[in-house]
Image (tube, one colour):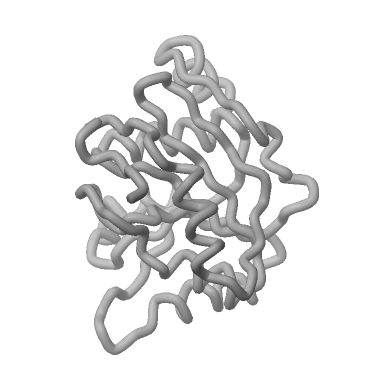
Length: 186
């Protein structure tokens, strides 16, 4: 499958990787992956193709309501993990606990939490990484240049404001599929 994905991703669609292209896979077995900007439903298939083309073993989180038959079979095959989004359950706890039960686990999330334009990233991904004591690896979805820039693993510190400045700077000005919904740091 990775060869077909690589052919589609690189040769047919014309995308490329830069930065930490080996993804630190040999040394980093657990991580929170954040990919941005999330501006369109096209981000999903580009992300799935990129993950397969780079031979990255990772999962993605989706609301449990879309895991119905027969879609659940496809979503799970693609790496989907259902999460209950009801108010009474803490999603940070739900997801961070998944790291405790696996020797290797990488989960991809959108730091915006929506396809709409945001001024600031949500904090859930950060708290998941902190609670699970795993690094954050950042992926840009740069539709303008058809490039995915992959960061080195980033470990949270005790200075959340400084950490978010660094994270948001990484994504600042990267053009998503829908340019006007892209993330621009204030």
